[in-house]
Length: 121
Image (cartoon, rainbow, N blue to C red):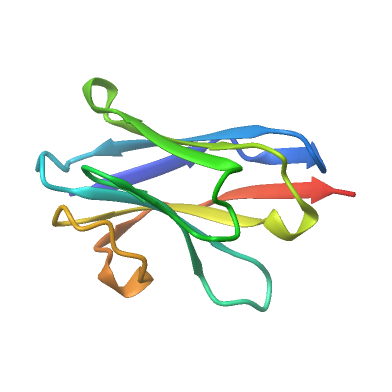
């Protein structure tokens, strides 16, 4: 079975940085897309970033966040810089079968448990 486990969340001051990690097991396809989504209380889950053969970013994080992956270690990362209070949310790692870096949560097949990011102002 496919498992995704996020880590690296925590409390950070506005303007600071945080690096999230997602370890993936049970998914061996080289055509997969990895993504990051986030969900704040009372809000819908929203797209943050995705990576396949290209990268896609939400306009709200472009220029501040960077998604990357280490294939050998089955790990995907989300480097978050210049954090704002509105970035506070539970961040979820996701995977989909296919090489298209889609922005819709419904397009993803597997999800991690989430990691909390809190940004103080």
